Every structure is written in C-alpha cells, then in structure tokens.
Image: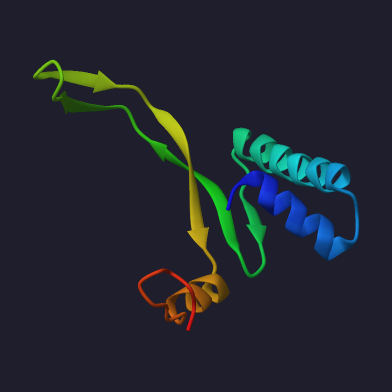
Length: 101
C-alpha cells in the first residue's frame, strides 16, 4: 500500500474528501517529525511509540576505505511496536500470497 491508497482509505472511512484526508495525514506526520526533532517521544495507542535513540561518538571500521574512522554523536528515529499491534501481526496466519486465511 502506498500513500495515495492510504489517503483514499482514510477519506472513505471518515467520509471526507481525499484532499482533506491528505492534509490530515501530512499534518499528523509533520507533527510527529517536529516532536522527534526536539527529542520528544510520540505514543499512539494500539500502534506503538516513535522515539529517538542517541549514539555516542565512536570509532568504527569503514569497509569502503578499509580504514577506521571516528563516527560523530548522532540521534536517529526508532519505532517500537505496541503490544496490541505486535500481537495482531504475530497471530495473523497467511498463505504464500500474503492474504490472511
């Protein structure tokens, strides 16, 4: 599923136009991104938690140059699935084509 299909599903479910649905999705994602930029976690019940992890400065091997390098301290986004989502996905049986049985 791509973004367009998701927008259409949300619009149909909420009985709103595709344009309104697109604006809703983009605003939600923008707010999540802005909160993550300042280091704040976002928890969505039944989905999971968007958060950040900080990696300290460290020395590591670069296979391309076959040399060691100093990697700077950095913060990266992470997602932890909620228990409900994890259980729903784990318990879903599917056949080879991916459709639930």
